[in-house]
Image 1 (cartoon, rainbow, N blue to C red):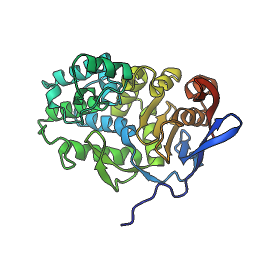
Image 2 (spheres, helix red, strand yellow):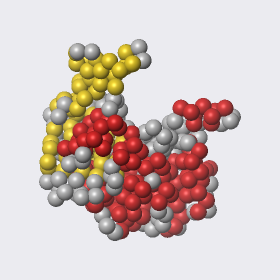
Image 3 (cartoon, rainbow, N blue to C red):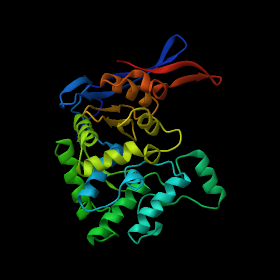
Length: 319
C-alpha cells in the first residue's frame, strides 16, 4: 500500500546543542504566513498533508459554534483545550456538561490520567483511576455533547464520522483551511480526525486570530483571553498566549503546533519525529519571523539541555 510520507522534503528545523557539539537534529516542515496569506517563510514542504491532532481543536470549536453551541470565555477555551486536568479545568468541564443537562458519564473520550503530574498524583491519591473527564480532550468532548444537545442530535454515537456533528466539523475544517479533506482517521481521544495541509492549518489560524466577528472571533477571544484554560500551569501554549497579546496558539501531538496573530499572520510546523522537545524553540523563532518582538517570547522558547541538572546546552531553531 502506498501512503503519503511526511518525510519527503523534510529539512532541519532545530538543533540540539550539548556542550560544543550538535547532539541531535529535528527535521520537519514549517511555514510562516504574512497577513495577506502569502508565504513569508517556508521550510520543507508547506503543502505536506498532515494530521493536525489537537491543533485542530480551535477549528472544531468553530464548527460547534456554527452548529449552535452557545458558550464563550473560559467555557469555550476549554472546548479548544488540551488541558492539564487540574481542578479548575475539571470544574469548567463539569459546568459545560451541566449546562446541557449532561454529566461526566456521557463523555465518550478515552479514559486517562491528568496531564499535570501533581494533578495526576492527587487524583490517584483521592482514590480515582483513569477517567474520561481527566483526559486532556474532555473539554472538546463536552462541547461536542453540548452541541448535540442543542440540536437534538443523538449523543451515544457523536463520535461516528457520519454523525451530523462530525459532518459539520469536516465542513468547517475544509472551509477554514481552504483545503479539501482527503483523509480521515481516529484521534487519540476517539474523535474523528480530518487531514489538512500545513499551510492550510496556518491559514485557518490566521483567519481565526484576525476575525472581528462570528464564531472565529469568539474562539480567538476565548483562547487569547483565557490561556490557562487552553493548557494549564507551566504549559508553553499558555505561556506564549500570556506573552503575546491576541495570540491564538495550540499545540498538537506528534510534533505539531499552529498559531495565529491578530493581523492575520500565522505559523504552523510539523516536527518529523513527533517530538515535543523542540516545539517551544521553534514557535518562538517562527513568531519572530512573523514580526513579533523576539524578546516577548525568548523566555518561553528557551529549551535548555541539562547535564547533571544544570544547563549545558539548548535546543535552537535552525532558521
